[in-house]
Image 1 (tube, rainbow, N blue to C red):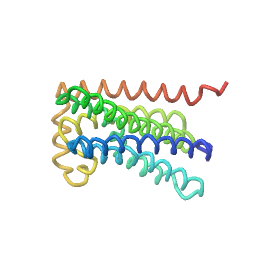
Image 2: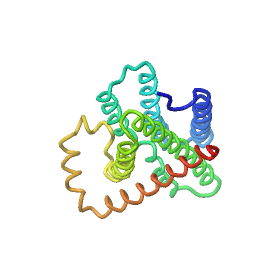
Image 3: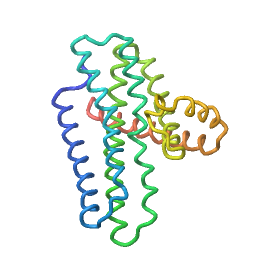
Image 4: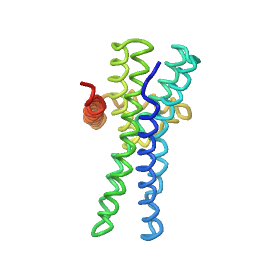
Length: 218
């Protein structure tokens, strides 16, 4: 199964690597020149944003050697889904702009936008490639169901991460507390609003990426 051309993949990953390096360099400028390491955690968030992409790349490599069965693809897909919300989550780090003004404000703005941009692209590309895997392994219908569900759940995951400060691994370390809160949050207006708005945003961003990828197909 061929999900993408090898040369295209390498070019995309190289460019993503450059953008990630730029983001880290902007943070290092802040830490060394401005003597401010307040947002050091954003580097960890960037690493987490790469994980869904790494999972999909690994899945594709295994599929090429016919190692992965349908059941294993579903397991890896659930693992991917667990980390996928971390990619668009960095958009919410824009909340950290408010304490700054003057020249430092513009530096923080471009720094956070760079982190958010490369993280979002990592997530959207992983979404595109895992849809290809599902469409080939199962069907286009089930791939669409999986993608739509993933987008909605990622919107809710962003709410859990930003507002309630849950992490992906809390599913394993604090499963009872997480489940109790999830059940309690169904009537939470903030949960409903953030889930809806982020789901629509991620969904439309993915549609835009998909259309750009296939721009020259005709």
